[in-house]
Image (cartoon, rainbow, N blue to C red):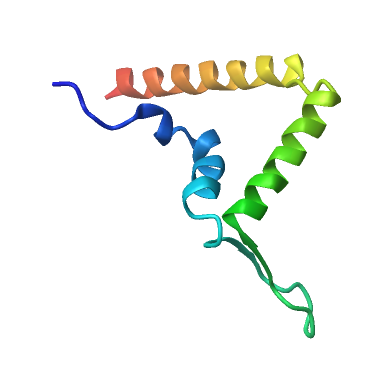
Length: 92
């Protein structure tokens, strides 16, 4: 059975943009004060979307990419974890 829900609306990356469009003045993020006397920071969905886009564009301009060595290390750790899990299961 096909679901009428738009799957793209469930993608985490599109959440700020979608909320900025439909709930622009609602509070999106509250950052607590770090020190006594400081005020907390509140961003609306429109402000938060603009903030996220600035960071995304800055990273794109700098050609930010994951460092391959970390990808290989994570894959290796995942494989080690899977082997340990299989070893544990075979001992039962």
